[in-house]
Length: 525
Image (tube, rainbow, N blue to C red; front, side):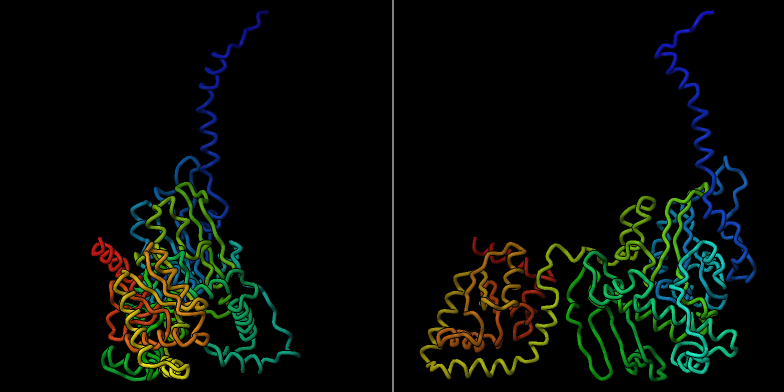
C-alpha cells in the first residue's frame, strides 16, 4: 500500500477547494435573524395608527439563505407618545430621515398610545404617520424586556387608602380613575414615574436634567434663532402677537429674549454660539412639556404605562442585530445624549449623525474663556453699579485727593492708552480681571496690564485717584477696564457707556475682538 505524501502545495489546494463550503456555512449561520428580530416580527399586539387594525412591524424570515429585505431596519420603541423622550428623540430622527433613506435604512417607530395620540404626535413632530405603529398595552415592550420602571409597589390599603390616592392623583395630569381596579395600577405607575424623574431607579436621569440647565459644550445648539416657547396663553387673542403679549412666559425668538409676566430681559448667554447653551435644552423640553400638559388626555391613553421605557434596535437585511440599546431612565433614550444618533455614524456618515438638526455646531468655538458662572455674576454686579460709582468718588476724596492728583492720573491713563494697542486695568485678586486677561491670552493678543491694586477696598490715594479718573473718563466704576486701539470697550462683561461695544467677552463671541486686535497690529506695523 502506497502512502501519498502531502505537500504544502497540495494542502493549500485542498483548502481552496473547501473554502466555498466554509463560506456558505458561515453565511448561512450569519443570515439567521436574531431572537429580537423574530420576537418583533411575530408580535401580535402592534396596531396601525391609521386603520386601528393589527399590523406586522417586521417581515418574518422565510428563507435563511436570502435577505429578508433589501434595506437595514431601524426600530425605535418610544415610551408614551406624550413623553419627553419621545418628542426629543423623534425631533432628531425626523431630521435624520433623508440620511436614513439615502443610505438604505427603513425607520419604524413604535409608541404607547392610540390613534388619536398618534395623529397629534405626528402633527407636532413632523413624523410620517406611516412610520409609526402602536402598542397600546406595551405588551411587546415586556416581551423584549424593555425597562418597565423600578417596580415600586404602593403600601396596602391599610396604610395608603384609595381616598388618599384619589386626592394625590387630582394634583397630577389626567383624570382620576373611576374604578377601584384602575385606581391602584395608575397610582403605582405615577409613583414609579415620579421616582424616576427624581433619579430613583433611573440611572442617568439626574445627569441629563442637569445638562439641560447647565449646558453642554460637547453638543450642538438645540434651539433655533426663530424658535419661540409660549407658556400660559391667558388671552383669547386673534393673532399670535396678541397671544404672546398676553402670555405669562415667552422665550424667544432664540435663546436670548425672555418675557416673564411684566418683566422682559435677555439671558446672559445670548451672545454665545455653537454649543448647547445653559437652559437651552431645558427650553426645548419646556416646549414639549407645554404640548403634553395642554393635551394630556389626547396623548396618554393608558396612564398605567407611563413608567415604561423604550429601546433602539438596528437590523441588517438578514435580521441580524447590528445595534441595540435599552433605556432605563427618563431623558436617557440614547447612549450618547450630547449627540443621540452617533450609533448611526457607520451607516449614515458622521456628519449626519453628529448634528442632524443642522444648528450651529462648533463645540463652543475655539475660544471659550469669558463664559461660565462669572458671566451671570457679572450681570448681578452690574445692578450695584450706582453704589460702586458713589463709593468710587468718595474713596479718593476721603484719602485726601486733590485736583492735581486727578490731572496727573488722567495724563498717565492717556499716555498708557496711546502707547499700547491693548491696555487692561486690573485688580490682582479679581476673578473678573483674571478672566479678562485669560480671554486676551487665549487669542494670543499682547497687552499692557496696569495693576491698580489688590482690590478696590485696599487701594491707596494714588490708585484710588486712578480708579476715580477711569470712572470719570468712561462712566464705568468696576474693573477690569479694557482699551483697544485707543477705544474703551468696557470690562469683561460690561459694555462701553455709549453702547458701542459689549465688553471683552461680547466682542470675543461676535468675532469682533479678533478683528480689532488684527486692525491694531496692522496700524502698528
